[in-house]
Length: 150
Figure 1: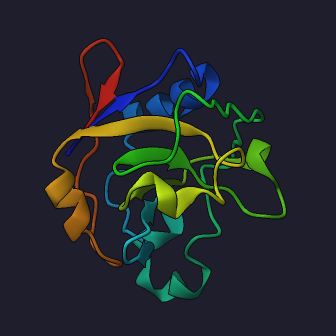
Figure 2: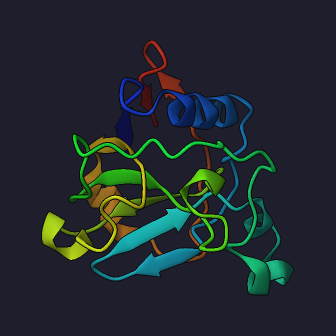
Figure 3: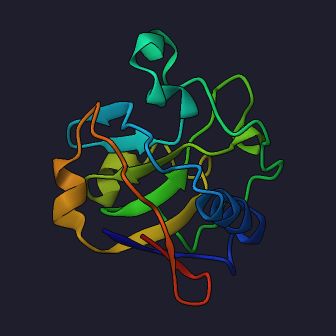
């Protein structure tokens, strides 16, 4: 699937994620969260080790973004890509974990204003809809001038 990123609304967040992509951080990670009709989530390096499954969802790259680039111009909707974070850290604690919305905007009213939407799936949403926990992300790459990731 392909994702268009929003560097104008979330410059530091997009730069952080693109840096991780270029370092092959996401290659080989597993989907660690699937909530039917809600989200699919990945980005925890611990998911490479099935013996650490009890801790999946708690890890990251070790470098938080440090800002919450939440824009009303980019709402949660089907195919929106947003940054996840631990509730104890708040939005500025977002790091490598991202989620993709699997439903329409009405389903995400409680998330608006608290999570930064940094992109949108532009191709392959049918693939995203089929992702489940334990599925492996084989490869993530940058396409174009750093504006779209795959």
